[in-house]
Image 1 (cartoon, rainbow, N blue to C red):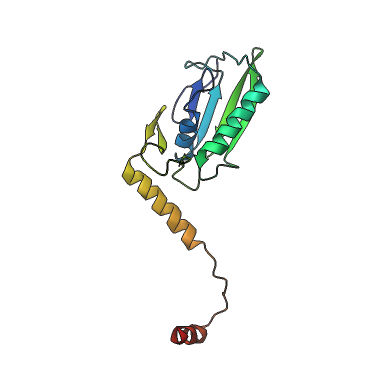
Image 2: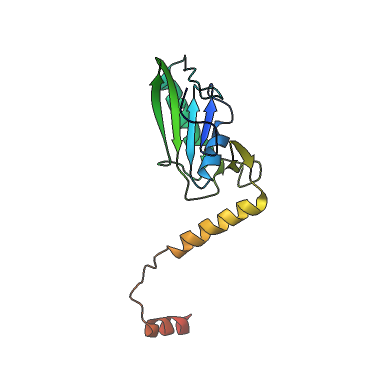
Length: 163
């Protein structure tokens, strides 16, 4: 048994599931990120993984990188852990900075944006998607550096008159 329970930062899966990307997106869009354990049942008991662990690890990595936008490189890590001679995976997902994250090719819609609520994922409401996108855009525009930092008011006045 792992010394944790399923909650807003922890998810257990017995095997690799079809909705892995949705779970990862939920953690990326949350305030704290989280951990996904594959090879662990809902009670935290390590069941272990029978198949090729290296192949499974590559499949997980490829699915996360290929199916989630914006880029999640550097926002997750995968560990192979072992307990009682049973190997399992821990996918560590950081809180993303370019929210809202969504399923690739579906745009930022209520069907492709997810957030973690308690021990489950929920589809994001449209107003929350818009709010997170506005915050991301505002932050990125604020950080753009002008290529001409040495302009004076006189230079600007001349430029304005020319235009």
